Length: 488
Image (cartoon, rainbow, N blue to C red):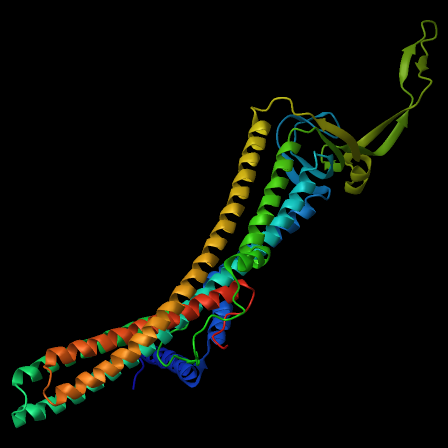
C-alpha cells in the first residue's frame, strides 16, 4: 500500500488517540481500584490543586523580592566598554588635538557607588520584605486550609447524596411492591382501580425522585473530582465512614474558648498581623525619603585613540639661528633638535597605561522641595497602615462570627437530629400501620401515600441534620488545630 500524506496523518491520529485512551483508561482504572478517604482527598488536593500552585509561585516571587532588597544594600559596580570610529574634524579626548582622519577609539570604564546613609530606607525595605514573605507563607497556609474545608464540604455532600439516593431507592422498592400487591387486589375485586392508579402515580413520582437523587450524587462527585483536579469522576469512589451516634463531643469548647485558640494560631490572623507590621515599616521608609542622602562613589577608566601618534626614525640636528655681518659665518643654536622621518599610532597597551583616570568622591543630596512627593508618600503610608489595622480587626471579627455560627449550627443540628429521629421512629410505625390497613382495604391510596410521604420527609430531615451536625463539629475541631477527619 502506498503511503500518502493523508494516510500518514490517519495513522498518526489513530496512534495518538489510542495512546490518549490508554492513559485515560489507566487513570480510570487507578481510580476504580482506590477508595478515597477524606484524608486522601485533602492530601491529593493540596498536592495537585492549580490555585495552590499559583499561591506557591507568589511565595517564590516574594522570596526573590527579599533577596533583591538584601543585595540592594551592597555597593553597585558597573563596567563600560566602547569601540568605535570617527570621521571628520573633532578634538581627540586623549591627545587634546584636532583629528580630521578616521580615528579609532576605545574607552574602558568602571564605577562603584555606595549609599552611606539614606534615612534607613534600604534597611527598612529589607525588614518589610521579610515581614511580607512571612505573611505570604501564612496566606498560602490559609488558602490550603480553605481548599481543605472545601474538600470536606464536597466530600460530605457526596456522602449525603449517597444516603439520600439509598432512601429514594428503598422508597421506590416499597412502592413497587405495593403496586404489585394492589394490582392483585384490584384483579380480585377487593380494591377499586382508582387506588391502583394513585399508587402508580406515586411510583412515578418516586422514580423521578430517584433520578434526581442520582443526578445530585453525580454532580456532587463531579464537584469533588474537579476540586481534586482529577480528569474524570468515572470510577471514583469514596470511603463511607461510620458516623455512629450523634452527641455533642466533650472536647468541643464554647465559641469564646475556640476563638481564643484560633485567634492565636490561625494563619489568616497571623498574616494580617504581619501586614500591620509591614505597613509600619512602610511608614518608616516613607519618612526616610525626607532624610538627606550621603553617597560614596569611585571610578577607574582608561582608553585608546588612533589619533595619538609617535614619531619613528629620529634625526637630530642643530638649527641655524643667524649669520654674522663681518664673516658671514652661520650661527647655530645651543640646543639640538630632533625630528622624525615618520609617525605611527602609539601602542594599545602603552595608551591604556598612560590614559588611566581615577576618581573618588562623596555626594550629599538634601531634599528641599520635590512637588510634595515625600509628604504624599508619608500620608499614603499612614492610610495603608490604618487599612491594615482595620483588615486585622475585620478578620478577627469574621473568625469569631464563623466559629460562633458553626457552634450554634451544631447545637441546632443536634436538636433537630434528636427531634427528627423521634419523628422517623413514630412515622415509621405509623406507615407500617397504614400499610397494613391499606392492604386490607381499611384506608384508601391517598391516605397511604400521605403516610409514606411523611416517612420520606422525616428520613430526609434526619439525614440532613446528621450531616449538618458532623460538618459543623468538624469545622470547630479544625479551628482548634485538629486535622479534618470523619474518624472519631
